[in-house]
Length: 302
Image 1 (cartoon, rainbow, N blue to C red):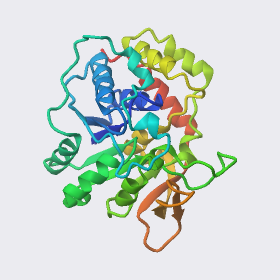
Image 2: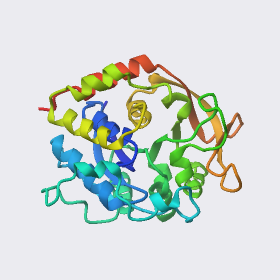
Image 3: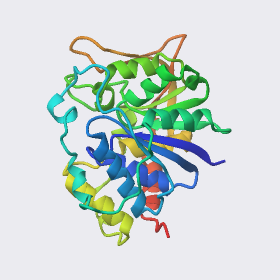
């Protein structure tokens, strides 16, 4: 059965957002109903999403601009993420380029209407800060009864990092929003760093994408070059994959608490409890996932 999904993204910073959208568009198991943007320079993020959809021949999918700031302005690297700084991947945007028009209403309204008006369940896949999702829950509390979330964010253990100096990016962008979401009662699968950090493309695989010879792979390669990061870790694409194939990961029910004060602000404390609020991914079949990812990314959309 094809899953209806809505992807909420902060495309433009780390490259995995663009690859997550590309992976979803090439996956017959999902029907992307809408895309919404969140956090920072959301107008540019929306244009990036529209550019990607144009190249992939999916201009039919609505893209709406969401909330640019966290609930409270106490956040890390505030000068970069809360101002008008243009994400590095915006270099792929050509001045005066003809792009599809963004959805005329706010992302929060698009999310609510997409979920509440659908006869089928729509799975929301947030791969950025949870500000849009928390705002939706506040505006339409019945949303928690009509949808489920597959969230890329948080972590359970610390095996992948030698120090506890930094929380996972998406949660720490807006810890208050994350806390609202995790405490709302909405069904959640948390795809955190415990599993995503095990899904890394090799240099040979990155080269295969760069040499793919398709308009889609060319765009992704240009965005990757603009990103200029190190290892290409498939954080967000794994969340998309789990939305339609949960057998890729092993999960455990956990009570996830989001820390909103002190030095641990933004950390997720996922403990075993009689009242869990999320299914937390703890293991992943990374080889099977990466093989599937590469096959889909190198697929000719025409």
